[in-house]
Length: 183
Image (cartoon, rainbow, N blue to C red):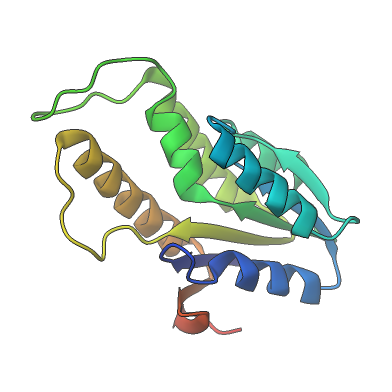
């Protein structure tokens, strides 16, 4: 069963995904996509590590998410990926480049390949898969080409993932709203 869990910042989406994983009774593989680019992010990552049950296996994969899903997927496991929008950021900004304030932005070479591999892995997953992603398109249109590009790509990614998943849940104020399927 593939489940996409969407929500805004601090909506409770990760906690909800972790509850589902724990309740599954299966071996949990936690695939973390975050990278510690600064001290604040390093602290967030450390806190997340401390809060996870010790018996969960953590795989850190900032770019090759499709490969990680393919490698760790098994019928007796639940994979919890947290989170797709951090992974998207990693891909979009994988190469050092200057971005224009206006106009079209060309994604780095790895973007299309890794995105396609990830979407392919969703079709081939065995066992359960929980995917956490931010819903970034519900606010004002961001200023600047880079911010709009990121929001557009996040929206496209969430749509593609939602089309593949049997369940899609939106979390708001810690409360789940089932958009597709049932839990």
